[in-house]
Length: 521
Image (cartoon, rainbow, N blue to C red; front, top):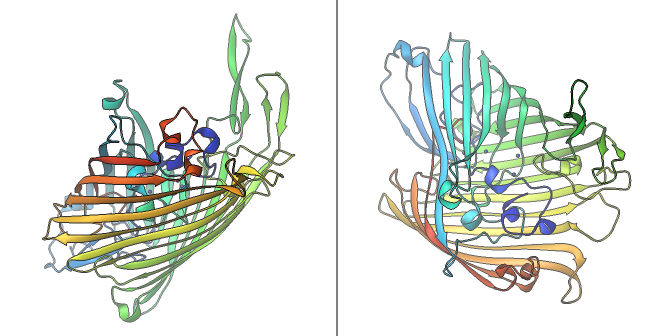
């Protein structure tokens, strides 16, 4: 186990929100994804970067059961003759999380992150996806998959009193495989490995309507090395005056007005990904190396100022991003370590689900930049496990000024040790620290404005599917205390209780699950 306004947008005023991050609720949590080759037609996850092993037609081979980043166990079963219906079938999958929490003061628990990608323990929110998938195998060479994934966004009606529910289409695409080449087109969450503790995809995360192609281009004779090449092009356009505007004009026939499109400039994105796997001795463990790049284009357009009714030209804009990932995995009990680095320039510095709010004098963001380094890992034994993650990020907007709320350095570090009690129970504790340093003067002292939060929490849970940090479903109790400094409190209006309190509580109950999802293995 799904491109990521951020968790911060749910808690901070609009003036303090970071522009390059996508809405936290719109980014469902996932595991560090295994990123199997696109030519694979199996819906089951594999070892990170492990290509799906082809099976003899008409036979059911060894079943590899995995969780998170690595294989958990391999169950050897005697080959069986596959029934004709097994080549054509429907599948159902889902990801979901639901929480109810109190702040111990009579209100609902609120998120407390001040960085773009803070710990998910409080700020992730309720969210769910329902997936229907049709799998067909027409011959040994030709297969297809049709995927439809609907998302349920908060607030649910229990907290609004309204019968309407916000529903989004996350996946709606068709995929076909001919021998080793896979081609797809449609609406797709197209992404690689995530950092579970931060609910974040640090390298590749696209939500576009487009298409892609991928295939293995090299495989060693002993199967210990494999290289996969993938490419994708897609578009997205936000209902925002930066990309889209309709204005009323006099109707050509009859009376009244009609709306015409004045501004229409979707962002076009091309991605390229080269993944290489090395498994010494052909065993379950090894290394995964990724080289990844993006190109972004935004066409010129004309915008009509609603206040002055004067047309204003918007120039074309562009950008690029280059990143890499190195992951080591043992193939045992989800143990892995991963390092991701990336640098973006221009419009590529901004997440496609967000728009810039500051510009250069020519209304472009060509001088904007984002640099980030992220690390994550997991280690497990029979009775103990620990997940950890962290990142540093340096964002500079496209404005010429030296001071701006959109120029900042930020980072997070988080660890979650767990004790497994028997096969189905456990207790996790989590501690984290996050900080953002903004390029504006601190009103209460010298130097730049700095906001930081320390969190400490405990999570006792019941895991029906067994022990392990990535085993789901998980039914939890949860308590977290967030300690917020004066800089953090200063980001809120004085009338907001978050501007007055230095300690916030979050106590509640919740559940999280994932199974049989093509987007979040």
